Structures are given as structure tokens and as C-alpha cells.
Image (cartoon, rainbow, N blue to C red):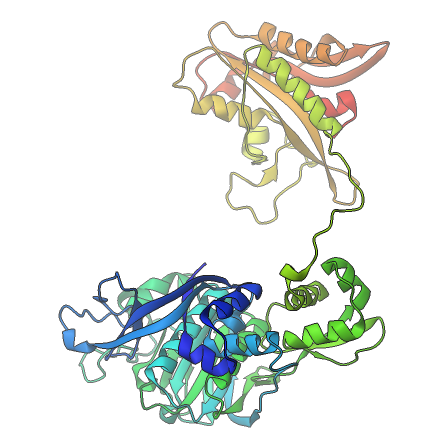
Length: 613
């Protein structure tokens, strides 16, 4: 998990409670934060793009800006030393992006400490801008159709606030955006954006050019195309893989056609946020409307917590045939069973007590009586997907450290599954005969499972809907491909070789899952003097351990030499079952698996033999 440094001063000012350093760390740990402790960080500012970089006391000053790429060895005057700052270093709790910054973390702490109960309401004004979304963004050529936007006015920026906002943006890219793949954030100087009309559209790699963030707009060659950005700009080369499969690239532009950004790669230099910026235009783009909406809600509400005097205004998003207004702070309604919560957490709860616990975690409760509660979850909480998530919140508010540990009322002793007992006997038998056990992949392909073995392709195997490669397209119908591939991989080893595997094969069946697994054991031998005799002896030894005798019935099996293949019939007390096959492999099979010595093979169906799966 990434480690973030939360400025102590900003955090304690917004909590509004007098907490000693040790108590603050203790409370954060009770919330689930993995706190490393206090540290002093040295900060540097890139004067070209405004990026603020932090290093520990043992690290050397940065030699290059990660944001715009300026080399401080050649441009030492572009780096400013901002001095030291005390922070709390803690690992990011990936499921709680609303706690990634001092504002959001302080909001959670105030509730947990009982200083502010219930859901925080955020004032938001009606739409002041409109973004028209190009339908071409919802195609295979450029599949990034979702966008959510907001206007924020009255921000008083300081180096501390700038760093917090930058960190929050990058951490949201990591947690919700999956490193910008699913969502990316753009923050712009609103005074440089022409409102109210904006466009979010798809453009060709060479269709236009603009000055990306960090480039000198006065330089003759500063305007470059989207293709050149991916090839030359530091951020472009870092995230080029996100657009590698696209024929067109997303682009956000204002009413005068001035480019704001090329999501998810880089903003334009024209709309760069500076120390004097007081008003923001913010966008979040991605593939899912829900995800970009939640990401925007987290960012905007955290800004309000950091700077309470700011105002937030909505933006209309015009999709083809539909319009939405963002940010949307409408809470999510979840029904929660009081008794079920108490049972799961392991404490006695009534509706009133559960209501108090949920309010401490920032939720509103519509009713505090009855067997269920109607809970309003804040719009910035992305982690509440199920009532169980609210139960977890109740447990955190109560305190895991306050729950009395008790033993379960009944005890059971685990035992070996019958099929594993059967497999264990087969393993011990073959190991006693000098065979080495191998474990191979359950995924194979028709070329290996059928064609290489000279078998007709069947239809009763289970196929993989979206295989990772052409060699893993179906679940194996036989253990043979894996064993023979193992012999191929060990062709340089000393001969003779004897290997076996106990594992599952899969067949289609009329069951709830549409398939069944059967436990089998198979063995293979290879060497100048290895043949049918060796594999028959091994199969007979396995069957004998289960009280069966062996009878082989000659059969014309395509994977074996003519006259050297047979069906294996197990006999006991008048009961006869066909349980497998054995034989000496056909030369074409040896050639398909690149084997240069005679080889023999047997396979037994333990499920048919014992009835256990």
C-alpha cells in the first residue's frame, strides 16, 4: 500500500479536539489506519509547474520533477526549498478514499470522537456550465465515455493546501482510478476556462495540437499533437499504455476551443493552477459513471473540509439523449437489520444504540425504532456496497478492542474428505514404486488435449469464455497433456523417467454449475526399455490397494500403438467397472510432444472406482 504523509497541523486544526500525539495515533489505528508514526519531511516546489515534492530527512533533494520533467541539474533556479513539515505517515486504507487527506480524515475523526454526529450536508449551487459529450467516446475506438465535473470558487491556496490537493488527486488515481485506468482527475484554473459551454470529445492522434503542462508556451515547438505527447512528454510516456489500443483520444475543451486536457494523460499549460488561483474547474473522466461520480464527490467534499469558505457549483453533463447534473450529493439508502448486525458483530444492540454507532461513522438514520433501520450513506463513501459494510462500520464505531472475545459454543474436529483419502492412497502407492509426483495446470487447449493425442474432438469439455492465451482455452478432459508436457520439459534429464499426477478433470453435466469434476490418477514412463508392462504393473498396484483386481481388455485406442493399448477393468466380488486405459504411446503422439524415447501411459478414474469426487 502507498504511504501518505498527513500534515499534523492541518489535521488537528480541522478535528477541533485537543488530542495528544499518542492518542491521535491510537484513534487512527482504531479506525483501521496503519500508522507508521510521526516524521519530518522536507518539501521542494517546482517553479515551472507548481508541483510540490516531499523527501525524508535521509533522502537527497529531487533532481527531476516527476510532473513536468524539468531537470534541476540544468535548471536549479526552477526548484524552491520550502523547508520542513511534520506529518503522520500512514498507509492508505484503499477502501476509504474519503480519508486520504487531512480534511476527509478529520471529518471521520470528528464523528468517531462524537464531536459531530450524522451525515455532513454540503451546499451546492445549480449548474453554471454544460459539458457536451461526444457519442464517439462510447465506442471501441475510444471507450472512455463517463465524465463528471464541478466548479469550486473562493479557494485560498497555500503551499500546504496545494500539496494536499495534489496528493489527494494522485491517491484517488491509485485507489479509485486504478492508476488512471478507470478514472482520472483534472483540476484547472477556472478564470482561464471559457464557460458555460464545454465539449468532451474524441480526436485523432494528429488532429490538433496544444501546449501540455510543464512546456513553455513561448517556445516555438511547445504545441504538440496527442501522438507526440504519448511519445515525448514524461506523463505521456508513463501512461501511454492506457491509450495504446485507442484509435482516437479523449479531449476536453472549453467554449473557445481551448484545450483543457487530454484525459487520462495531461492537462494543458493554458489552464495550469498557480499560487494565485482562487477558482477551480474540476473534471473526472473514465469508463463508469458511478465511479467518476464518486471520485468527484470525494475530491469536492474534501476540498470543502480543507477550505470551508469555498462555494461549489454544479455542471450539466449532456450525453446523447440524457442529461445529468454533477456533483450529486444525494445519499445512498440502505436497509439494515438490527438483530443481524448484533449477531455478526458479537454485541448486544438495539435500534437506538446502532443508530448512535452509525451516526458516529457519518451516516444518517431515518428511524431509530423497530427491527430495521433506513440508513442514508454519504455520497462520498464509495465502500458501502452491501448492508454488511454498514455492519463493519458499526463494529469500528463500537471498537474491536471493546468486543469481549468468547469461544464458539460448539466445537468440531476437521477430517479428511473421502476423495482426499483415496488420492492419498494412490500417491503413496506410486511413490513407493519410484514414481515422482508432478502437478500441472488444469487449463489446456484442444490442440494438446485432442489433436496431439490423435483423439477426436469432443463437445463435453468446459471451455474458458475469455482465455488468457490460446494454450489455455478449456479445462482439461484428461491428465495426459500435462504429464507429457512435463516429460518434454525434462528431456535433458537422465532416463528412464517415471512420473504421475493425481488431479481433477472436468466434464459438462446437468448440474447447477453445468459441469462436474472427476478425480483421476495417471502415470507416464519413458526410456529405452519402458513399455506396457511397467504402466500395467503401476495401475494394478493402485487398484490392489483399494481391493480390486485388474483385467485388461485389448482395444484400438488412437493414442497408443496398434495392439499395445487396452481398457482397464477393475473386478471385485463379481462387480466389474471400466476405470481407465493404458498403453504404449503412438509415434505420432511422441512426435507431437517432441519425445525421442518410447513412452507408456495409464490413467485411472478414481471417481468411478470409489464413488468419491
